[in-house]
Length: 108
Length: 112
Image 1 (tube, rainbow over the protein chains, first blue to last red):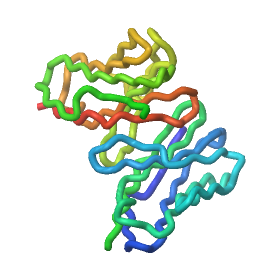
Image 2 (image 1 turned 45 degrees about the vertical axis):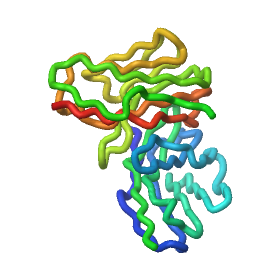
Image 3 (image 1 turned 90 degrees about the vertical axis):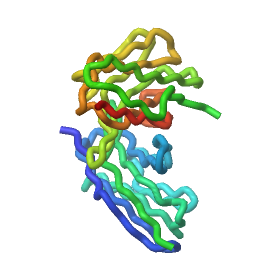
Image 4 (image 1 turned 60 degrees about the vertical axis):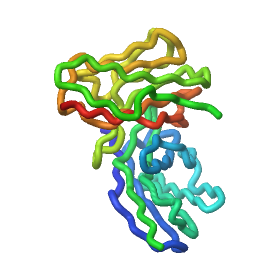
């Protein structure tokens, strides 16, 4: 069945790069998404990638897609304390399926 | 700025009460969704609607119903609240059937 897996926690130092990983199971997914949830708020769409792409860059964000291994990653360069949040990976193959979310903690 | 507005940020209800969670969007979106968010489980889809008066069950519809009488409003109803429905409820809308959703800020419901 459909399943999206993420590790639950990641801690980095300010200025370092963060890499958040995700695996998914539905090979027919057409889009893959990264959402960000700040404390007390709803989810905000960060970026997305089409399934026929293998990389997308948007300022400090780089998304890598390995379709063969069904692996998606989000790299945040020069991580700041304002990047502390929960990051959700989601796949869309007819409906949007979310992972459990990775809580990113950025230490000064 | 486009918005999805959930009427309450926090709600406390008693077991057995009928609970209404309201969601309104101002973007003329066709599609609306209700999710619940629980730690370690991510977001799980309760119900969704691709058109006015239309509703579809998501992955965990038991104990819930929905109403969509107008395009901009999608209500989630807990017919008889139970403690295992204590959760964060998130409403979302989208223009297309892809995954670019706009979310509300959420309603944290506690059932005692």
